[in-house]
Structure formats: structure tokens, C-alpha cells
Amino acid sequence: MAYGNLPGGEPVLEARVAHHRTTTDVLIVGAGPVGLSAAAELRRHGVHCRLVDRLPARLPYAKAVGIQPRTLELWDRMGLVRDVLEAAVPLRGQLLYVDGREQGRMELEMPPEVPYGFAALPQYETERLLERYVARLGTVIERGTELVSFTQDRDGVTARLRTASGTDEELRVPYLIGCDGAHSVVRKTLGLSFGGGAFQEAFMLGDVVADWDLPHDYGVRSVRRAPDGSPGDTLVCIPLPGAGRYRMSMRLPQELAGDPGADAPDGVAHGVTGGRVPGLADLQAVVDRLAPRPARLSGLRWSSVFRISHRIVDQYGRGRVFVAGDAAHIHPPTGAQGMNTGVQDACNLAWKLALVVRGDAGPELLATYDAERRPVGEEVVGRTVRHAVKGIDADPEDRRTLLLREAQLLVGYRGGPLSGAPYGPEDAPQPGDRAPDCGGLTTPVAVYPLRLLDVLRGRPGHVVLLYGSDGGELAAAAEAVRATGGAPAVVILAGGTGPARTTSADRTGTGGSVPPDGSAGPPAPAVPVYLDAAGEFARLYLPDGATGFLVRPDGQLGARFPLAGTAAALSGFLRALSVRRDAPLRDPVVA
Image (cartoon, rainbow, N blue to C red; front, side):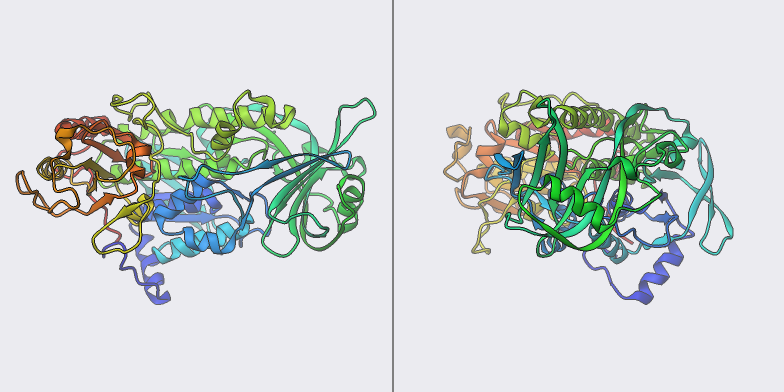
């Protein structure tokens, strides 16, 4: 059944789950945001998976609350973003107070071409929306099911599961992904090192309502200096959906601190811990001391003690088993990087696994997961530790660059194993970079401008963008795309007012639309055609004449090339993927 025509009835869903248990391609352990994202992307690419979690239900903790603009872009392409936008609250900036006086206001303003800003959503809500999404694709979480052990050989992975009823099940699968958190069984069984350290301080977290006059769409950071002038206690408040509701974090008072070793039997002191749970009075006492305004707390939903470590694995996988999210990297929550980095891990791995599972790529492609994502994890761990210790100004970057990095819009893989040779201006988006969104695309039918994300939405595979003005040249390039790989091609017609780097020879086409079969070239299959009416595509992509762009499933550029070299560029990319020549980049079908 083609993607986009998925039934949502429960009887069909149950039948699908029963079918998947006998045809599992990938076992995913852990149903947090990272495991759910992996399942969502695998299912979009037509791969059957089982998703197990040892917990009987979602935890009610608002642990990871920050949603980065890059994550919203990924969810947009999946078709999930509308649900998230309706549930989340905007995070427009942060107010900084020192000793009760406002010392600064950081505005989280993105450049106008970035479609989304920063948002906040409790982790349990993020999980609920993702869980509902993957259920529509035919995969439900098997709650109360624990991975006991696994072994692997050159042909697959044998896992032993203990189900909610207490029975043991042996499962044979081609691949396994560990998204099972900081205390990952998958990571330990693989024998991956998890080097790093831990912060000595413990923190209190609380999901509460604050009755004060501060703007709700701003985070609050309030510091009280020690007698010697050094930073002392700190209160951090992140807005949550609901009038006056925040997730507050503060240092744990000594009288509530227990033995950190009791909560870290595996040596990893990270996350929500056991022991005494702070009450509303404990949180109120700290707020009375640190808040910049008098505030009465109420409506406590949950509270906990939280410890922080910073660690990263030496490899993101071995053989047929991989780790993602907190199973691979943990660090301070500064800048809300953790969950968002894990979601990108999942999206990077999923499309590669899908190609290999379908037989459209060789297994060596999977080595690029570690090659691309571990450097990102190392950078995030290092940066969040610096910011936690020295503040966000510890990095000597201009404010715009700093915000783009925090928004994860600068994550890229230039020079990596899948990034082809650069082409065109040095300041243009190159292979490995994020493919920028843009607005102002029009068609003869739509009376409103579209964004590039609108064009890409719902397309789970690779997409080739062909920019130019000559109908014959565009038609020939579209035919080369079809002959080389089968990925869908989309024509972006030059013709806007932006600074397109085109020559007069490139502007001899139709000027408004390109017939699907080309006006001056060989016949080509029908392809979607959009006019760059506002010139935004030309301004952001800086095409050097007639230029093609290969957009990967995770929204990164895989190749950039002159239209005349379309076949050669795509063949080179396919060689990097070690893809089958007969059906390499086709659109997957969700069965």
C-alpha cells in the first residue's frame, strides 16, 4: 500500500502488528523520543520494526522540553509537525537576572528564511505524539517488554526478550538499535566504552505553576552571587504548555542529597534518580530565595532529583547493532541539545538501514552512521559542558552563529564519506550541509506561495532538485535522474528577482513554466515544476548557472552539480552508497 493511503482503524493496526512480529527487520529497544523517531523513519521507508520498552507506560516527567528548529524541520518532512505546533509553546528567549536585577535578555530570533523558531513541549507529550504517529504507520510499542540479552553473527542478531507476562521470547532479526538511555543494556552488551565524567552537584526538577508577572514565552535564569562575587545558586525556568506552567530546575539542597552511588550502580550517574522526591515546599523554598519576583508555586505535577554526567561511546555501533541518543551520548541539558541530537541520530541511521534492509545498498553504508554522527556527538558533549561551567558566552562566536548552532541548523557532514565534491561558490550550501528551506515557490495552480518543505513533505526518500531556465536542459537532467537512480526529480524554475547566479545562456527557456517533456530537448518523464518567483531559492542556494542538488532523506545535501553533469554526479553518489544499480534511490512503499 502506498504511503499516504494508510488506514487508521484499530483492527487493521492489530493485524499489522501480528504480521510484523513474524517479519521484523529491525528491533528497536527503548520507546523514548529517539526510539520512536527511529521507528517512524523506518516505517516511512517501508521497513518493518518492533519497538519494545521495559516500562509499562510513558513516564510523566518533563525531562527533555526544548524542541529545536532543526527537529521541527525533520518532523515537517515526516508530516508530524502540525501536531507538535498545536501542542507546544513558543520559546522566544531567555531573561537573565543576577541578584534580582535583570542583566540581559537573549532573543532567540532565527533568520527569516528559517521556517520554525524554538519551542517547548514536555517529553511525555512529545512521546505521545510520536507514539500516535508510528501507530498510524502500523507499529505499536510493546510495553513491559525487556531486552534480556542478545548475540550477533554475520547474518543477524538473536535477541532474548522478556514480555509483560513474564515469558521469554527468542527473536531473530537482521538489525538491532539500542535507544535505551544512559544505562543502556545494548551499549553494555556491545562492550562499548562510555568515557567521560560527572558533575558533583545534584539538581531538583519540578513541573509547577508560578504566579508571577514575567512573560511566559521566555525562559528565566536567575543567579544569586556568593559572598566572594562568584556565581552561586541558579534557578532555571522553561515555559511549558498551560497558564504559568514551567519546568524548574535548581540545585538540590544538601539536606535532601543522598548517596549518588546508590543511583548509579553501573557508574553512570545521570538522569532522574530514586530516593526522596522533593515536595512543593522544597521547591518553594528555593524559589523564595532565587526568583527575581515574588512567586507562589502551585499545581505540582511531578518533581524529582536529577544528576548529570557527560559521556560518549567510542563507536556508535558494532556489526549489526547500533546505539542512538542517550545510549550513545549524555551531557548537561544546557541548550536543550540531548533529545534533539538523538532524534537526528535516529533519522540519520534509519534511511541508511532502510536502503540496506531493502537490498538497495551494501552493508558498508552503515559505517557512515558512526562516521557522520559521532563527531556531532563529541561536539555537542564538549559544548554543553563548556556552557554549563562557563556560560553560553564561553564560545567566541557572534550571536547569530551561536543561535544557529544551538538550533542545530549548522550540523553538517562536509568531508564525510557521503559528501561529494563541492561545486559553485564557496559560500553556497555544499554537500554535507543542511539543505536550506526557502519560500516563494509558485505553480500555475496554487494561488499562494509554497515553501521548499511543502514540496519535500511526505517524500521519505532522496529528492533531486533541478534549477535552471532552459526547458530542454531541465528535461534532459530529469531523464538522467530517472535513468540513474529513480529518485523523484523536482524542477525549480529560475525567474524570480533574487540574485540568481545564472548566465544569459541559461535564460533562453520559457520564462514561466517548463513543459514536462521539455520545450527544447529530449522527452522526459513528467516532473513537478515550481517557479522561484521570489528568488529565495536562488538567494539561499546560490546556483552557479543551471545546477542540481540531491537532498538526502535526513534533509542534508548529498550532492551539488551542474545540470550537464547530472548522471555523473548521481552515479558518484550511488557508488558512495554502494547501491544496487537497478533500483537504488526509488521511493519506498509502506506495506
